[in-house]
Length: 199
View 1 (spheres, one colour):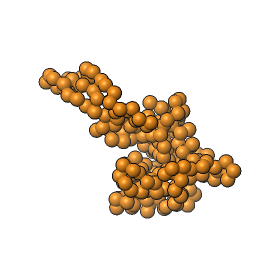
View 2 (tube, rainbow, N blue to C red):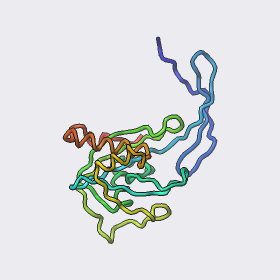
View 3 (spheres, one colour):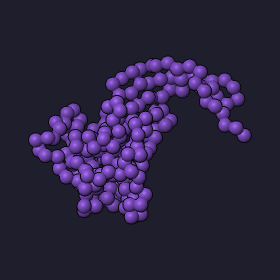
């Protein structure tokens, strides 16, 4: 049995915002006919599991307006600079959000964040051999990011937080579980950071 080709018969832009674009496509369906499919076109994202020599990762609490709550998250950000490699984006976000630089970078996992309505593709990196950004070189955090404070959490406790439902951001849950798995496998499951490429 051959697979159906979901051809796009027509497409229109419904909304264009600062971060994403909402599109409606007319898509050919199996058995004939077509259906409307609404989705967000997203620039992609990165998240960073920064692990220190004591086996702790850094988390932040960030207000997310869509859910009206402060959520526990890994440092993260958008792939919104054209041509920038995802690992460079990750390094920039790590420095901007928690004032850290890392000498060692690996790719942990890649995730379609919510493919039922968005094409967002996220790269989650492991950052190790950490050091602080010099005070006079630190970014000025604004808006929701002005409240960000680094919280160092033992990796096993972060896993427990995810499994208790205290960490709910899907990308971050995947990243935290991936770090724990990589550690338990002696780091043999890690991929080179430069495998991740901008879409």
